[in-house]
Image 1 (cartoon, helix red, strand yellow):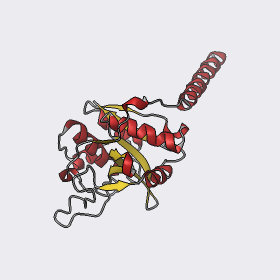
Image 2 (image 1 turned 90 degrees about the horizontal axis):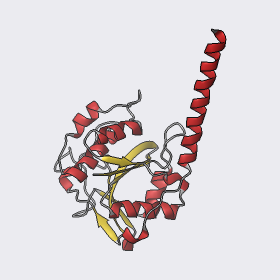
Image 3 (image 1 turned 90 degrees about the vertical axis):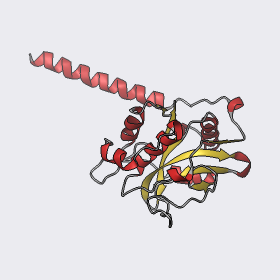
Image 4 (image 1 turned 60 degrees about the vertical axis):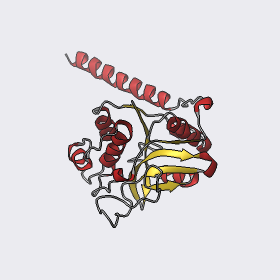
Amino acid sequence: MIVYKKKIWVSLIGTLLLLVALLFLNSRVKPQMDAAIIKESAFINYPAEYNYRQSVNDCGPFNVAAVIRALIGKNVDSAALAHKIGWRLANGYTLPWGLESQIRSHGINIAKPHFGVLSDDEKITLVRGYLSMGRPIVILGERDNYEHYVTILGFASDMDQYFIYDSIQAPSHENPELTTDDNDFLPGNKIMKSRELLDFWRGGGMYGFWEWYGLVAGL
């Protein structure tokens, strides 16, 4: 009986090591993008009335709501999503698995390209490619020494501009439930240059995992 149990444990450990090895190998595969589909600029419709300001530590579910609004056009309740989302840590942070699960539950497909194996220029090219296909991208970065999610909704390559929904922007004077909007008629509420975007993104990650995390959403 002892020998039998030992064989089971050896088998389980071997299987676990194999899965870890496969995951590592898969994470080294470089994402590909057909350059022919990349536009000079691309915009996903996201009007100013969608720029809701998050409650404490709720950037995860508020960005889930942004993706749903951008792709389905349904003005979902961000606070309700924050209440329901899973994979919360004790400090209120939401792990990426929580965003992925909640987005899928609304019938939206996701992809998680391995941005970390790309050069900075290749990362920007891949971002432009997905946005050219009308697919918003949620990324995990660092703002004010905190981990923070934002959603990329468009770009204009000639001006090196990326149009971002950032749920922790300052509150609007007219409606404190919304953020200020620096984008006027453009999607989101702020603009980043590619270097600024990469520097923000570079600071992301939790406990050594999810560095260069990007969640690409689409129907």
